[in-house]
Image (cartoon, rainbow, N blue to C red; front, side, top):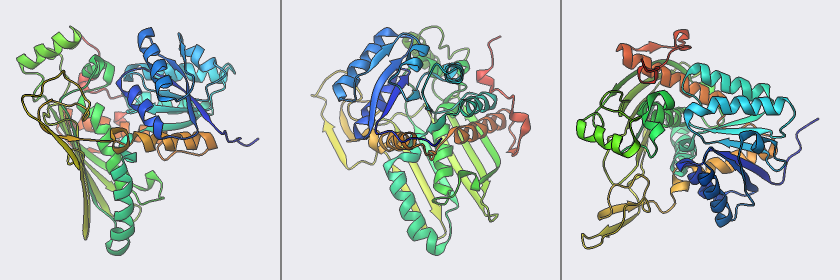
Length: 414
C-alpha cells in the first residue's frame, strides 16, 4: 500500500530550548503544517512553547508530561528532535519502541544538528529510524540559507556550466558562546565548538560543491586535517564567568572544551577531480553578533556571503540605554554603536526553507535533501577532525578506527 499524502502535517516538538523557539518562529513561513504537541522535562518551558504556538497561530498545541504521551497522541504525525545532544539517542530508542510496538502512528522524524556525538551513536540513530520505517530528515539549516540556495543556483548555472565545476568551499561560523550550560560540557555535547558549529560548516561546504541534483555521495571524503585550541574561555577571568553563569558543572579552569577549531577536508568527485573544504569555527568572536562567512570558488568565478554585511544597519548613541537582548541579531554583543540588523533571521539562516522542505517531504512521503545518512556523514567528518587534532596527523578515509573513537573533551570524567 502506497503512502497517502496528507493535507496538513501535524508535528510534535521534543525539546523546548533556544532552538525550538527559532524553529517555531520560522514556521510562520511554512504552509500545510500545525504544531500539535510538545514534550520536554521542564513543565514551565513546555507551557511557554504552547503559548508561543498559540500566539503565532500555528495550531492547538498540547503539552505532554512524557515522551510516550506525545508519541501516542492521535494528533501527531512527525517529531522534531530539538533536545540536547546527549538525550537524542534515548529519544530515538523510545520512538522506535513506540512505533514498532504499534503504539505510535508517527511516520517521520527530523533531528537537529549534529545527529549524534559519535559515529556509533549516529549509526544507531539511522538504524532505529529505518528499522521503524520512518521517513527521516537531518536539520542542517545552513544548507537552506537563502543566500546559499540562490548563490549555488547562480554559480552552477552560469559559472560551472561554462568554465567547470567549483573546487573550493570556505565556511566559517563564529560567535561569543552558546546560550545553555550543556553546550559547554564536552561529555553532554560531544565536544566543543568543533562539534557544535563545524557540523554546519562542513555540510554547507559539501553541499555547495555537490552538483545540483547529484546525490551527496557523489563526492567522496579522502582525508581530513583539523586542529583545536582554547583561546578565550580558559583564561581565569572568563572561566570564572562561565562558572558564575552556569554553575560548577561548567568548569573551564579544569575541564574545558575547545573554543576554536579549524578544518581542511579533501574530497574527490565522480570524475576524480580534487575538491577542498576549508572551515573554521569559534566561540571566541566578539563582534556585532553571530557571523557566518561562506565562499565558493571555481575556475573563473567566486561567490561570497557574510551574514553581518547586512543592508539594514542602525546606530545607537551612548545616550540610548536599555537592557541586554538579541532583538537585532543572534548573539548580539552590544546595545550601542553601529549595528547590523538581520530583518529575517529565520529566513537568512535557513530555518524557514528547511522546515518548509521537511514538512513538504514528510507530507508527501518524499525523501528530504538532508537525511540521517547525511547526519552520519557529517559526524564521520567531525570525528575524523577530532582524531586529527589529537594526533597532529591527517586522517585518511575510509577510517574504520574512528568507529569507537570519542574526542578527548567528551571522554568520561576520571
